[in-house]
Image (cartoon, rainbow, N blue to C red):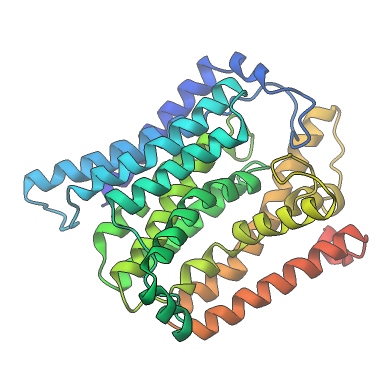
Length: 366
């Protein structure tokens, strides 16, 4: 597992460096008028290429290791190639958008939905239980509901990661933390194969972060966000499906930040009569950037914006850990996990309203 992770990390670092070196001029396609833009200069948004290269090669090498009688006892099988095939439509769709900036939202949704459909058809991914008796009975009576939920999860989570991908190191570090938390629980229940895929993905993410944080020389773009979303969705569903001891609410609590950010964003846009597909600058991380992170005074505006950008992400890393820690501690206790999910939702809404109304505690500004 360690050597696969090292390969994934190095490949991601090298490919990301090549993108930074040779494709910087291509970043001029990303216009200055975008509401979610919080940087100066032309920064490539093709971090997804490095993530796909590192993750894909790591998975394929793990599969090749099976031909050597699996000396690491990883337990990978031909299904690993099917995971990569399932990932490709979403990754290609996201990278195509990053290259052209012209792919409509409906087409991007179609690409991630295709990945969701492949997950159901090729990998037999489904949701057979939700940890609540009456819902579990309903899923047994109508198995197609479980398939529909799985398809929605794989199709939707990539866009949730895309929403929180706003500042240097934010989405990447959240993805890395979630991958390692899922891998930890997978090892707890003896699922080394799933843990291997997750650790390799985390390693490739680490290679991307070398260029992304703190200096922001490369962004993940839609391609990177979609790769994180599909891999983590597949791993979450497979972990629960393959291991009866794992509560279905464990991955929900792990991912409650990007999931609820998406749900809340849709709600507030509909409440204002705006299409949910229209980008804006009112997400939680953007409000923290504007109203909590103190200004940093330097000679030029570009450096000042970069430093404020870098200081925003740690607030959200801490916010993420508030859900990841209890999720890892109580991964098999459904009602405790549900309680923490509800607590997060209440805390998020209260914090959002406090920031909007300029009622932020002074200690948070330092």
